[in-house]
Image 1 (spheres, protein in one colour):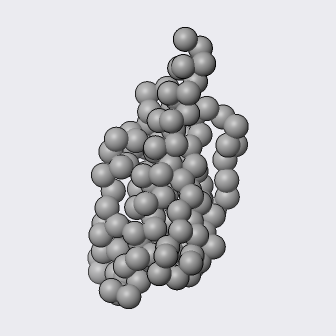
Image 2: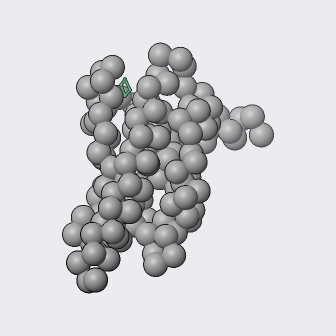
Length: 135
Ligand code: FES
């Protein structure tokens, strides 16, 4: 089992999942764009939710180190299928532990947590704006 676990961890470094973007013009698509002051790396995470707020798709583009890319890959897998309120509870430590990130790379997983929160916030803002526009 330990072997399989490590294989899975390395897989996110070697074969990142869900790279790309979603249609930002859709009201049910939210974007989280965050930067790491420590190194200048940037992560863009997009999520698509259904009418109940469940995340049905997630894509990312990360201009940064391998750990940031692996963190965003894992974050998208953890988010898909979850409600946004659940996804918001994903902590950088969950990601760092799963990927066995060393302390110097912890901020790379913080980037992923920040991107999740920013994307969820963007969905909420868009919904609010749409509700106000139709009121
Ligand atoms: Fe800065 Fe990884 S995001 S080194």
